[in-house]
Length: 279
Image 1: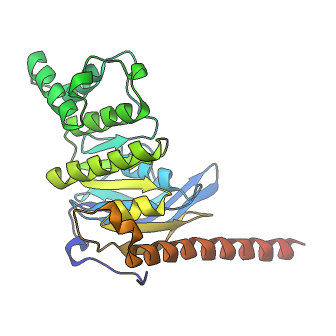
Image 2: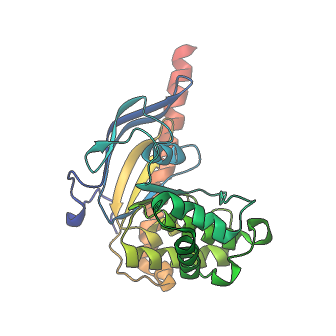
Image 3: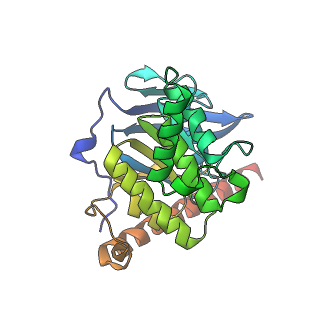
């Protein structure tokens, strides 16, 4: 299967969704991201895929409004992103639940932000509903420190859903989990996405995870981070893990690995040329 740049007809550029244009980001003068042009359509499940240090998390933080670009623009539904917003929920790798609140209280806090006019009994009922959706209905009164990593991350997903955000930004949310819990949460996420059709931008360095989850994979190279390929993932949904052993899946995985290897070689060669010039 070729990795030539492709575009899905359903995901054409428009005024809806997320638009990134000519994005640059530098930290202490060092370029982190360069010349990023990207459109994420409403309802699309997009994975940002790349090695450590390529700027995936930085790009996600910019989409969330937690950082601002050094140059270029980011907009959502035609309006500039200038800071955090309830329009964009974020799930981090470290779960980020408040440890002094029970699971239910964490969800109730999110509901107080998204539905400020509702009373406490309404928030309590809906908090239990969201926890039940992620399989935590019996753990509502537990504190995060008493739960496994997988359960805490399910709680973080429930909290993000409770915010009611049409966009869900996820920064390697399953990276610290064991393979079994990681697989379970991947499938849970796909079930929740299929029922809600939220726009999802999911950061990962795992090629198999990206191809299993995404409608489209945006591959980033590093030094500085930039888009080196965009790949439409055309495997049928709902997806089965038997997909991993298919010829098409293996070929696509290997071609992405080759993209990374070529990018690394080009970077090493560029650094060698620069060093020789300085000598």
